[in-house]
Amino acid sequence: MNTIPSSDIVVHIGIDVAKASLQVDLQGTSTSFDNSPKGRAALLSALPRAAFVIMEATGSYHLRLLELLHSRGVPAAVINPVWVKKFAGAAGKLAKTDRSDAAMLSAFGQTFRPAPTSPREPERVELKELLAIRDTLVAETVLWKNFMEHQQSAVARKMTASRLKQATAALAKVEKRISVLLEESVAIAPAARVIRACKGIGLVTTAVLLAEMPELGQVGRREIAALAGLAPYSNDSGKSEGPRHIRAGRSNVKRALYMASLSAVRHDPVLGPAYKQLRAKGKPSKVALVAIARRLLVIINARLRDLYVEHSKEKGDTARYPTK
Image (cartoon, rainbow, N blue to C red):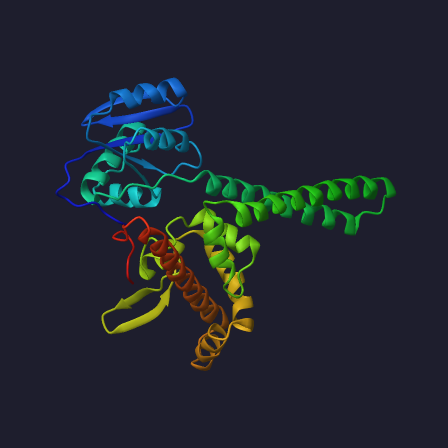
């Protein structure tokens, strides 16, 4: 987790976001606003000048507020709920209410001073939503195909075939739109070309990385691996050294890169031999493939960093890009 310098004076405001309400901890005073355009506007007016908003990722309920804060220049950090839950447990706060959650978010912000969450580009938002639709349609086509395999009634088979045809057509339409975004969008097409140049990376994996990993090219290799859930963690105690393991991270990204690694080890002249070396050392196939997936992610991260640095040189600003 990136942090902001402790010398910066900010007022961390915890907001517990629900579908219909926004519970706000305003420097020890708790108040509530409707999670509606009018309520969000009222909340914005109530924030102090140096406000830094802390909220949890809550599906989609927090997104409208986050977009409003970005549009008004108010910094905000969206925090993994697991981190906040463990922080509350460590502080001995076992009770859970909207008020206590908002207060805990304020305390979390003051303690860890997380870096603000960057605004979401419209193209990345669209990609993420299209991928969700694609996942649903893929599952639907599998469902109808399975039905047809066991149906004996001609009427039922005809109805199922019609639904399968609809789902297949809709899937093709979604994938076409994803392809257009990756090839023609000014905001993401350059990054998409860099990603797709890597062997093993196809249309869907490229879309997943751009939609789910906006940090690509902006952070170092260790942090990008941790964000994706592909960083190996130690499992040692005393003189005992347990096997390293991965955990947490972004499941869609891990799944996409794991599938990409299956292709990369067959076609990439660097990753293929690397996989064979790991297997020769006795690493199980899945462990070796996870290592290749991590290496593939690190390669993509480095190439996008180089792309962004090159673009930034024209503006004379490369300070925010890590060198490792």
